[in-house]
Image (cartoon, rainbow, N blue to C red; front, side, top):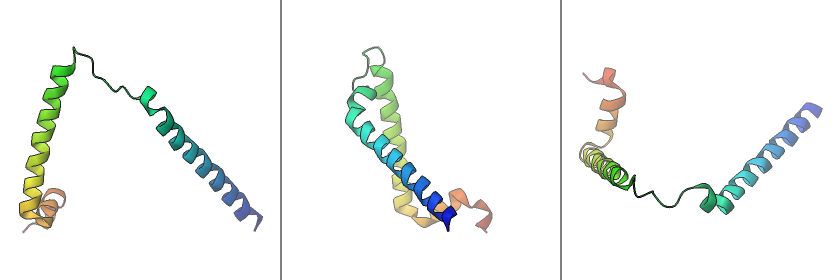
Length: 81
């Protein structure tokens, strides 16, 4: 029974550390994450976002049309007869 108490204590300590880390991230996220993009990189960044958006919309349209069948085809090709 003593071993279980030790495991619970370690688990509680880990949960407290994780919650503190998440709280600190949200408190200091404005200083951690860059909120502006440098002007020299902005054209490439906008191009990347445009391509990402186009590919995402294409994927969404495939999933809308085929539903679960599209997922089966992508991840389980051996099940297609």
